[in-house]
Each structure stands twice: as C-alpha cells, then as structure tokens.
Length: 409
Image (cartoon, rainbow, N blue to C red; front, side, top):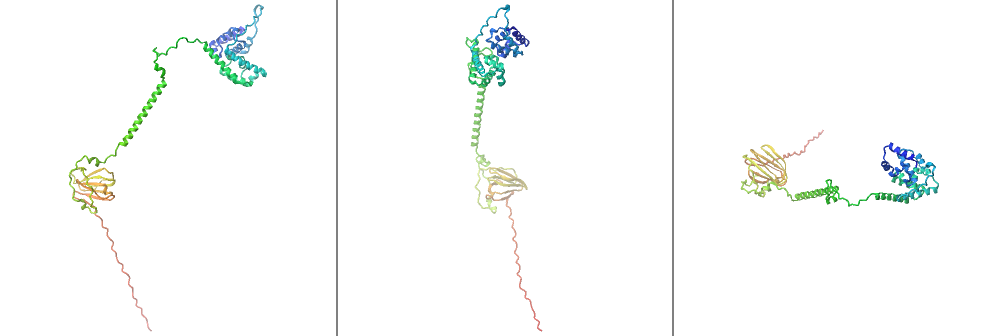
C-alpha cells in the first residue's frame, strides 16, 4: 500500500484533532485497521475489498475525496534496486462472523451479474450509493453507516434484484448476533464470586432491602392509606345511620314537665261552662300535673297550652302581643292589669288556665272562639241582633162606579 495514502489520512486526522478511537466509534472501523491504513500495512487488513471500503469510509469522514486515494491504494510500486516484488501473501481468512456477510454479498453479486446490471444502474433505481452496494456485495459491514441502515439497504437491494429478501435478512441478523457474542466472549470473564452490594458507608445491605424498592414502598403506603379512609368512612356512615334510627321524636314541653311535677290542688271556677252560652256542656278531661306558673302580681293571668295546630291572637290591655299559628306542645303565658282577649280558629286546640284555674278547651274542633278575660269575669262576645224588616201591606185598588146620564129630548 502506498505510504502516500497513509500520510494523507494521518495529516487530515491530525488537522481535525481527532483520535483513532473517536473515528472508530463513528465509522465502526476497528482501531487496528485504521492504524494499518495510516501506516500503509496492507497485510494487516482482512482483504483488499475491505481495505477499499475502510479507506472510503475513513476518507469521507475526514472530508477527503476517496477516489484518488482508492486509485493510489491499488497502484503498484516498483521494488527498490529493480528486484521483483515478492508474491503477495494471501489475505487472512475472514472471521466466522464476517463469513455470513460475505456469503450474502456473493449471492447479491452473482444475481446482479446474471442480470447484467452495473452498480451505477442499481444506484439510480434504488437511490442507494454505489459504494454501499459494493460494501454489501463484499460483506463489509464496517463500510455501512450502521447495522440498521445496512439491513434496510440489503432489503431494498435484494427486492430490486428479485430475490427473496427474508432469508438474506435472517442471515444478516445471525451475523450481527454472532459478532455480538464474539465481542462479549473476548472480554475477560469474572472468575471470582460476585461481591455483595453494599451501602455507601460500606455496610452490607440488609436482605429485606433486596426485595423492597421505592415504588413498592410508595404503593404499599398509598394502599394502606386508602384502606384506612374506606374503613373510617364506613364507620362514620354506620354511626350516623344508627343515630338517625335511635333518635326519638322530641317530646313536648307538657310531656317533659308532667312526670316531674307533683299535682297540687288548684282552685277552679264553679262550673265555668254554665256562664258561657253556646257551649255543649261537656267537660274536657282533667289535666293533672301541669304546673301553672305565677307570673306576677297582675290582676289577670293567662296560661295557654297548645294541644293541636291552630291560629291564635292574644291582645293584652289593648295591645296585640301574639298573632299567628301555634304548634302542639308549646305553652304561652300572659298577664295584664285590665283584660286579655283571646281569639282562635280551633277551640279544641287550646287548654287555658285563667288565674290558676284550668278552663280546659274553650270549644270544639274547628270552632271559632273569642274570650275576654278580666280580673273578675270572662266576657263572651255579645251576639248582634239583626233587625227583621217589617212587611208593609199594599192596599188592593177598589173598583170605581161611574154615573152615566142619558139625555131625553
């Protein structure tokens, strides 16, 4: 190999401040092959075809035109002192992993030559550059941009030639897998036992830590919290439901006070119903045990216990103290110096205590009752007498006799 090619490559690489390792990672060409290209040692390369592919990829990466370098690569150099050149040594056999790609390339080349096509013709049809097509035929995987792009180019090339691309793609994948296995096997295996994981301070990790991860701990905590809230909510709902079922109806004030008080003798008016015209005379059942509070020293004291819903109006000494609907169980007390007037639309709804005397209900159910309580008596409203109109007789007309005279001549 001409030293001119190696000098051009080395000088271009040094001008770009690149190392062989950096170029190897980009071009997928081994560092040993790059060193062989720069030193002009052709015997270190697998084959001349692969050397051309390596040179083309290396030159393109450095920004050099590859064609002059490829021409100089195959140019014969005269031996010094006119001695004939030694016979070329046979190229070393490609590794087993590269033999798969060489077999694929031979199948492509044979079918292309059978069809009588050139690489330039296929490049125009498939839009794949000719040097990539040549790299596929030579089995030079390192001259391809990447294994993934090489697989796509192989698929397009085989399809264009009318070949079944599936077997070729399977062989291509097998070659990649074999190369990966070979590279892994080249690494020095670890003969010693695997060290136990340790914490940052050098203390061996506890066995439980191996099975507990952060995600597992977070998920378990969240699940426990959710379960706690579900149980707490169920207990609250159950307690509220039990409280609603067990809560009795609120008793009235009369029912609460009745069992706690001892009935005391009270003075009652003698047959108060006799003084009230229009009453039926039936006495309400006696109510025992209801305390009658002594309001003050006023002359008129009235205590009302509501038994049914009704409308009521109370006027104390000419002023309306209450007007509205009353609810069973409520009690009202009033006192006055002159009079208390009571008007209700349901006489059976109110139990009245007048000056510590139980008058009982004032009327029947739905009966309008009006009473005026004074210091000495209970005044009922005086019924108004409607005057009856007097019928005036109209005299009948009597017949009138008319005298008629006859004139006799």
